[in-house]
Length: 317
Image 1 (tube, helix red, strand yellow):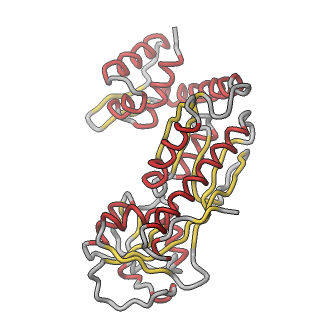
Image 2: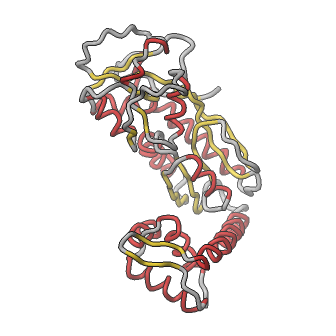
């Protein structure tokens, strides 16, 4: 008999292309996940995956089955959401996706905040790039996404949460004279470090510094803001840093934070969910919680005495 558990394991395996990572994602042991995939293959009478040293590959039939499995899981997710419509606010499972340039700074505040005020919540988190999170949202594998706006997708609702201003981070012992507040024209493009392709913050940095068509950028693309700022602290260049990251990253890296002259560049952070979601009250409560956490970060940054350059996000009015 084909089970939802097997389909969820297969979906995780298809997403990660790795048995160990899929097992971690689904909170089971690797042998248990592998056994369930084999049972699924036996029941269907087809080979779904190819196992090799290079990784896991879906067969042609596996790709066909995956599309049907994800459709079924999306239907099940909608059924579960519908069944919970009459429960209290933020009770039960909430699957939230957060982009990597927000997750390390927002999540440590948000989870305790939600658990204190909504003890019946079961929060599941996924950190990934915007495109992947929006795809998971559309497929019913996530209930909501926190990302930079605007997001171009059909059938979604967005709510602005806070404005996240950009600053320039340089090494603390950098002896180059930089005007503060600085203008976009003063950015040394040859020293600008960026996140790797796919991160929306990379595109935002290029837009802020008017470098979309230039080729003298440093070729190294970091996979995380933490890695990028360690490089900056070691004198390898400079980078754009969002306000929400400043309280944490400035405390553990030897960096200087330089504000931009007005009008200050920024990104708008919002909550995104499906228009068909039957729990709009929960989405509003979640949005309120994120905005409240942004205000807490702002107060902490001000109390630390870091000044305007150290300030955290301004919640939207």
